[in-house]
Length: 114
Length: 115
Image (spheres, each protein chain N blue to C red):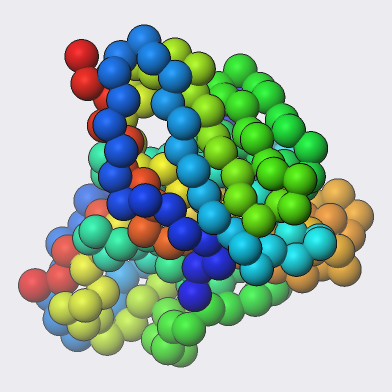
């Protein structure tokens, strides 16, 4: 079972910041938070990941609370092309050759409105 | 740098047939994972291959099998197709450096329809 809880859907106005929440209250100390998105009928696209510090890249920012029980993905200026299902996933760091499989939930459908 | 590619894009089979799906991993990646995504669901992990050996398997029956080749490309084979096997099949590759296996990058998927 997925270890994360996300709202099933959200709306955002084009040009505004989209803030997608994720709850992972049972996260372990060695588990990373990963975000992927999936535009209709395409393969999931990697966005960002983090362990405990906030992270930023060219696509998004990831804010992880100090207790690591929740996080927020921020798309700073949403466009229509950001309309997609966004998946928040917790994944253990896998030393020793263990599988780095991803366990997906049902994600959040973000609809960016013109 | 070439990303993950999959073939074919779409496929239609009938119940009881066998199917082979193919995946070319991203350059420099030696680990390949396969996922099944039914309509309206998130992807479900089938199995993973690392350096030509299976390295973890999800809750799928033995009629789902795979191979990884020396160039790290991979095949997913499904025997005795059932209607419920209709799904988007996704391949993801990732680099492994020593003991640590890194972020997975997905291909566009193969849409399989079983009639």
